[in-house]
Length: 182
Image (cartoon, rainbow, N blue to C red):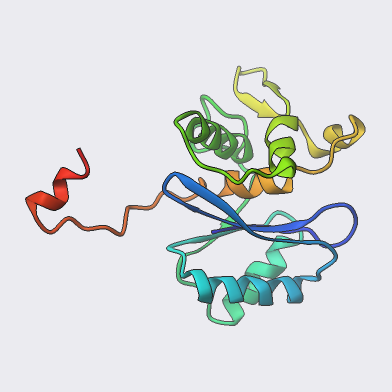
């Protein structure tokens, strides 16, 4: 599960869930403070039982992470900082560009996403270029705003689901179980 945090203004807080080849948007909110959003996140934590939850902790999201920890939701909780260097720094400039790249690979491999015009706009509006070291670099949100584009909240939510690598819960018990994986 991933949470992109916004508070007031034109941004939205978005909660999404990716399982295998499927991504779905659980909720979109405008104008919630961090306490209200934390309550909604907890509701989805309890209902969906995700293996991991990734919360954008650059800026306002740090408050949501703090509140989740304070309320005992620490298992599987991961802070996402898109502004830090990428794990694959030879290919990507920052972590945000890296998770967007992983999401793009996933989409090209035949993923299933909601038929949502806002999600489509988010996924296609972000432009990219290259750093001086030829690393993939996403355009800044301020630059997007100057072009008349909104913050890609749903796209960021989908991308953040790639910030943590998880193993499948399915544990094969027999040769027959292994057959479906071939």
